Length: 441
Ligand code: PHE
Image 1 (cartoon, helix red, strand yellow):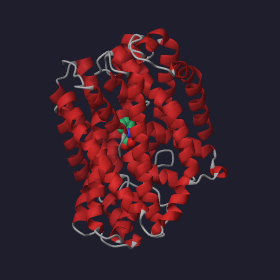
Image 2 (cartoon, rainbow, N blue to C red):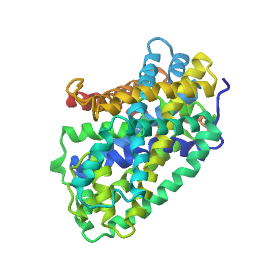
Image 3 (cartoon, rainbow, N blue to C red):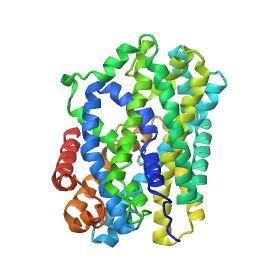
């Protein structure tokens, strides 16, 4: 298979940002912030994103461009030994994450139709909770939407790196941003929004605990799509002169801005209508429709919002499938189109148990968690941070002189924080991540 290439730096940055910006920012971030102390979580999250997050992302770009391969192939080419195991763990994580991610993304498609039909136009959270519970627990309906979403994802990936992924991100990401800004303006001008703003923006440092760090770390890795080799794969399609540190900074910045904006949409609105900000994963699907129902033109805003979620999910799921397709192409020589179809069918089948675990299979537990929650925890809280440690150590110690010349394009681009990055890769990231992981267990 001939390897793809990005058309331009901005196209690459948008594609990587498209991978990062997703359900993690819009569905997960607001409820993580709400459950972990609001502004206190925000402070810890921002600190982690701008130290560990951006450094690991740059490390992945470096491995990708130097190795010019999927995660397994890149580690094998650059060092070999046991290192490709890190890549295999990333491939496994991509299968796992995509399988349940596509289930949630399927819900967002369903909710576009549900909100357009007026079904959600009630402000009674109990009714909306019932609708969401019945829908997500149904053995058939969500599985069909999961299939539909996987088909959409496969369609984009089959079209290739430049024509499919880059083009769609170039259009969809700016659109997503615009819709989010409109919604944020609507939310913060609601009467009663001030209390939500205070909760979200005024830190109470006494609320910072070990759990805050743990949640913020898992959230940062998931949201930035790092720790599993997606950014290695995306970096492998880059030409040598692209400025990697600046690209990593931009992607990180975009991801953070979208998450912050999503919080600005969700939290003030929830407070303005006195709903419980601790509603957890149901916040978007249960509470927000109630909020929309009480707004002028609520149906329009609700449809816009769920369209936005589908878009955000699609640009992320595409990157997850791309890692698998790149692996099958590089290592086994599978043609892109057949690899896309075969792998999508496998991921679709893998996702079915996750979907069923919210309904008829809710009795099956793994380590006390349902299948869906277990896979989410296993990937975001364990596999991605472990991958982050390995990637930092690899760049910091194993391929260092080469890694630095890759990061600076052989001295061609200025990288003023090179020394800081080196220290973070060598010491800070491995130690901090390991410490946060252990304190969480
Ligand atoms: N970063 C994406 C989001 O926030 C999810 C994702 C995780 C995508 C890991 C790829 C890899 O929704």
